[in-house]
Image (cartoon, rainbow, N blue to C red):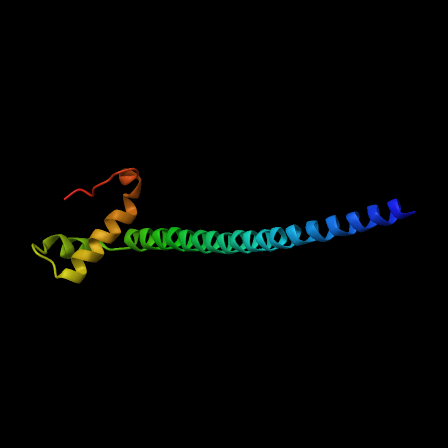
Length: 109
C-alpha cells in the first residue's frame, strides 16, 4: 500500500511539474496567435489600400479619356508647367505606365 501511495505522490509531483511547463507554452501559443491575428489584419489593410489604388488608377484613366483635345493641347503648350501640374502629370504617367516599371530599381529621368 505504501508503494501505491508513493507512486501516486510521484505522479502528482510530475503532474505539477508538467503543468508548470505547460503554462508558459500556452502563453507563448497565445502570444503567437495574437501576432498572427495582427499580421492578418495588416495584410487585409494592405489589400484594401492596393484595391483603393487600383480603383483610383481606373478612375484617373477614365477621366483622362474624357479630356478634350483642347485641354490636352493646352497642357502640351506649357513649356514649363507649374510644379503642381507637372507632379500631377508625372503621377498620371506613372499610374498609366506602371507595368513598364515592374522590377525597375530606378525611374527614368
